[in-house]
Image 1: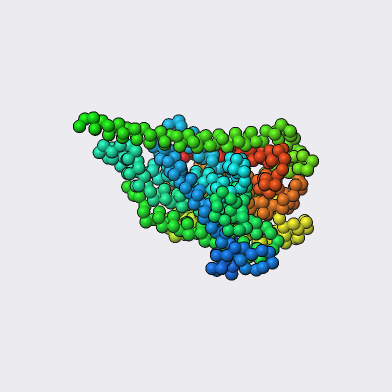
Image 2 (image 1 turned 90 degrees about the vertical axis):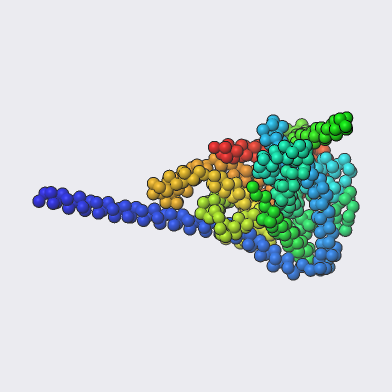
Length: 301
Length: 300
């Protein structure tokens, strides 16, 4: 009798335990699902600003954007219409000059860092590049003002280019270094074993092999600085007229967006929306080019 | 024949040396540039350091006309906007990092969200500011009316929201890298003991990546401290000490952007450069610490 009772009790206990376990795992599963939901919702919310911004700029900018807009100078206040040709030309010129400055130096430093993985100078150089990347853009503006604008006696597009090249440099260096580091050592050894001198090995074997990575890095660094405004405020300064002299102040897209956006005139806001759209389109195109290059010319070993 | 060969060998030897020298020289140039940046800022802020001294950091009046430069309101403005931005963006950035680093590592969903994050990082600061001015400011104004505070629209809060959006991609990229580096045997061990995914994330991944996530936040903070254009357009540009998160203010970067070209007088310019020096030093320290933590984490 007692035995049976005990067995029964035991059974009941087990049953309740397993139910408890059921309940327990049920709660944990629910928590699991809830957590995933939370993550997904938060992620979707974080992407909303981009969609809002893109949508708003396209909505406002599409009306302003046409051939006239790209080929005419901005009109004075009160006259609707006009374009941003001076800023477009200015942006492109400033960027071209900064590319001429930054790309060779950046690639050379990248080569050095990928070759000298453990040297002391390499360590300091890498640290300096990291720090350079983190310097606020407005501080770069001050520096170039002191280094270039003051000695030259006035604002100039050239000083803007120097400022932007200083901002491009770290990402070009990083891209070059990362790409070349991934290349197998055997590639270099094979070339050296054939008696090819070291500098020819680097310039004719290593760099061409990693060219797609370097190119992508350069394109992305251009996309990054094309919208930089702060370093241009005290350097390129802006110019309401068409100017192609790099020793004189020059307008650029981000500068006129800033100036017109903060003005109280509706016509100018319209110009700024159009300019924003041109800028965003340029950045999108550069990003797409970099993705295509990455995919098409991917170096694989 | 032999002299010709040795002549060629010599030439190659010379080129070889020149090439190596050029490489090393370029590396030295970067270090020199960095030191020169620091020295330029330091030397140019001497007049202000000498004339104002420590009062620069605790005086609240910024009045170029009577040559009084107290940067406390801007210091407070900078810290308030940056930390508030960090508080707003952190939950979202960690969520996105977990989303991309754990739930959706590959596949079309991951690709879409990765591209969105990249694009968010690519939008220029000035466009964020412009959009904020026309979309965010009216929204914040409505919110302020409901809360019965003066409806400026522009101010610390508005700037912080824009900053939060701007630094999100930056911390997401870092945290995602860190999260994807968690060794899979740790996760598998937890799964084999019957842990749910939620438990693996909260009890394995997050504790393991704690230092890396912290570094990501630190670097994002460094980004926020120096951010200029969007904040300049949205903060209201007043020289008073901010009284709350909805009041207008100014950050160090925005004061420099607004006043540097108009600054006349040695001490005025020098005081602005001193703020630049401060930003440079803080950003550099944060950067070095953050990168060191990440490097140590990667080596583990």
